[in-house]
Length: 446
Image (tube, rainbow, N blue to C red; front, side, top):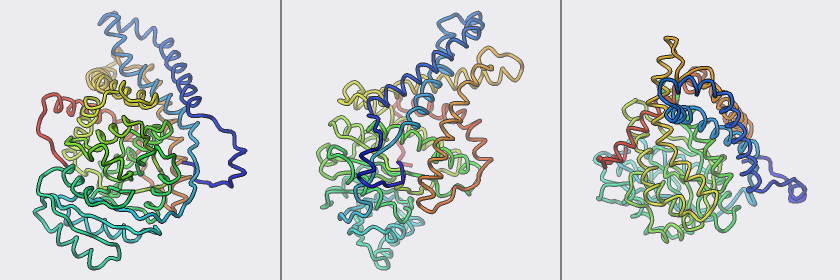
């Protein structure tokens, strides 16, 4: 989101490129890059085919080079063309309700409520904390916050396990047109709610939700959280901006998003799914509503500090994507851009399997001088990745962090490891999630 707000007169004179034109310009750039990559890879294709046959060689190279290159090129051109609308009013005063589902959050819930209390938002805020079977002091800490903070806090209890049960319990009691969900370990920037409400109020009537920007709050904890800091700051944020540009943000994440209460109730609230926020968002999109993304509505969440916790989280996300594809088929989405964005998810298992089964073994072989799978041609994906991350880094630093008076923390080691090795961990973890979903293994909230 561009963070400079022009006068209406100056805005009217600004050259406008429609979303339709941006979409096809981005595709032209992406297909041109993929065609160029294919032309350069013909010797590589021929060499690999001598070992595994042409069809299999093509499938391998497509999974680790052609398609990733196409997707990165589409992302780069889209980010360069991204110019989202201005706020109509940066200081809204709508009454809002916040839902926080909490399960054993004794050490975090008070701080989360404290940061809500310190918002510069002008409207009335009511918070429902839904205690979902906690066995610690979550309720005690919530009641303490109720006594000490100025915002209106109400503690609810939901005995049925499952985040969706907790959120739907709270949704029944919401009396405001807008409702926000926040995870119990998520902290908000002081202007966060103001920008989130301003975005949904400035959007067309058919926009029913806006996803906030979620960044890491515990990036200093260890090397593992330092790597994830860049995933949230660059990787996840770039995908959100891409999807927001085409009016189809695919996940209005439960960690921090705003919704129109009426539309939530029309689709029956949150579903019984491991990726309840994914399925919820796709059901909203299926109803011809649109979902935006607001980069200035910044929140900070606690990311997994252990590899085991990370694997469980990302495997759950992968399962949630498969659930979403099963629940709402991309071809049933009424909007062209959403058909495309959700349809891309059909490729993800293939790409993750290709990376896991071919790229990683191929990389190991390359160290011994065998460049059958991984060689100089595969490096063509790297420049586009660096370009897209550079574009987003400059945007995040200059138009988001600077405006919010935040500073990008120096974290060079985490960045290097993120660029060079993160995907080698993410793809196998995602494959693990796909296997879990295929065999319908036990679900875990956390």
